[in-house]
Length: 319
Image (cartoon, rainbow, N blue to C red):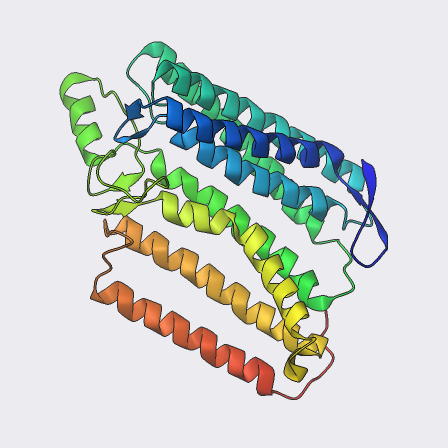
């Protein structure tokens, strides 16, 4: 642990290993950019260093945020520090294997082409499952945190819960696709078991760098959006706090707290919406009528909820 000073001049104890690890991942991400420019190899239609780059960015955000969240705990901080250390080690181990496979020009996830590749993916699967359990422990402990600003108080809790759900959505990718099941039944072998895409094979046209499919469903989208509720919802509370200096309607903590509740419900609804879209084999960039209708209803509900949150009389909100 290390003592840092926050923007209000108070001291708070951040989790030093995860902060340093987040910084290291940020540096690694820069290195991946250089490798993307120098190494022109592709894997399933994407640059071979795209996955290490994306994982480095996502991991840096994840562990920097948890470094701060652990500092909010008045109790159980030692246990939370241990859980964060475990999560850090597990993610680090998985990341090493991802980079190892990138160097070899082999798929890291779902790879069943050789016994060695299959064994590596099984090890990563165990690491991911254990990482989810460590995050569950951290999320439970976070419920005991004390934060003076009630909007932030609720934002970090709802963000952690939605993030945990988003991480769990990764499990939707690991089962064999119908084509892989048919190959396993016919020959007893499939080079890949599991997929990001739904309705189409992995490796088709995708969004630049992100790689999300533009022709079919992609389960990485709800996984990504859900996981980063951990950053998005606390940032919502921060933004509302900054706007409160200019907008009188937001100066009451109760109003900002209601808006965080609305925003959290809307964010969870967005995760559910893109998961439903992906499971139906529909591309994010080519939504059908049912998806657009659901999106319109979600946006309408969030706007209405926001208006009600601002217009209702202010009362003291229980934590």
